[in-house]
View 1 (cartoon, one colour):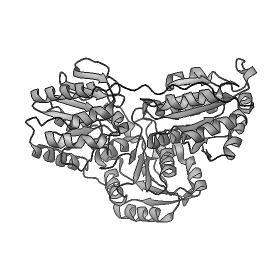
View 2 (tube, helix red, strand yellow; view 1 turned 90 degrees about the vertical axis):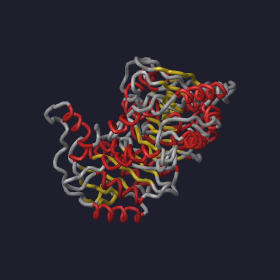
View 3 (cartoon, rainbow, N blue to C red; view 1 turned 180 degrees about the horizontal axis):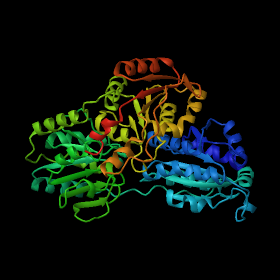
View 4 (cartoon, helix red, strand yellow; view 1 turned 60 degrees about the vertical axis):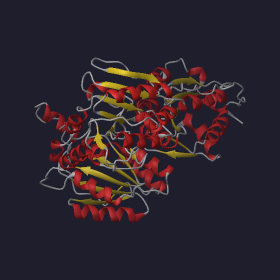
Length: 532
């Protein structure tokens, strides 16, 4: 057994099912070992997409997603997707296959310092040598999955990959347990509720890793308090609930902030400021109870009543048992606010608009269907408009916010959940970045419709220029041409009205393979929703 065989065996034992990447000479020993295993090597169009796919797998399963690249340009391509795992908190192993060990310190073709490259993007960057490979990969898996989860980089020289393996011998330390501060949390929230007139609860990215997330809803109902979420928190509390008050920091953000500014107490459970800093939406001086696996950073105007790292599951269980306290919220306020918000998110449009397409898609996608969406103006619209009551049915990048995320993550989701409907929504700018991944979908016959919201603009940048009174420049993609019959072998249909879009979705869902729907939408409606 050589070290590549040992790596693959270790991945199998950890529950890894796929390795995403692009071949090269140094990668071939690992690919050959994968060929003889239960772990599938998935060829992507770019290393960036490979890392995005690994990020989505890590998030959906809790098992590290794995991506691999060659030396130099392959590694630099990989970093964009690895950054997503870093700031969106997903367990990932990023393997760079390097030149042979004697050349590691030489200035030669393609070689750069991979460790310096990946250091700011990972929890650890590890150098594989002939006798330590087994130990390092076991350590990497443990590190990637420890709270908060994230990517670990492993650099694998070609000669090390082919060397005779040494069985791992080091004892990998178990993950450090976070302190159980549930009694302290319960006392702090009880006291805060007894002094508050209008408490409000928010959940965020860390809450998505809370096994006890369902136990928080009875507390909300018993206290009769409203709740809001971040973009990543969507679906972990039911958005059809009467106490739901919206998503902070996205489309019609000012409407949501006007509501949250009424609160004199913020109970933040599993909130990660990497998505949006407290200062950006909490009224200065408002009391905050921050319950998460990491303490929040202090800032000007932030008033924390409680702010410590703790075990989130036990904390949520304790919160669910807190006795009812009186407050001055009127449930009809929740209804009136959300009703006004729904209307504001759907402005009158001169032509087919993105919000109309999203309503049609929401109606046709099953409740457990997964929507992966990209970065752009539509990100804001989807986060605020889309409603889901089920956890992990939305895939998006918020901490990293890189265009090009949606298509790879949608295909990864279909690999993980082959029995569920998966749809991708992407802007025309993001589609240009990752259209090549349709070849992957065709090769693997992944039944994922890709909905391209085609308006001929980088819509988010257009709105930002308008808000700053800048002349529009560098954001026009051009007048969209008519749709082709296919992209990379994936059939395509166009839609310019709600009726055409509805029929196109029915067609795409009936295919049993990849497809593209180009929805030609009006760019102007974003100006009324994105930042207002």
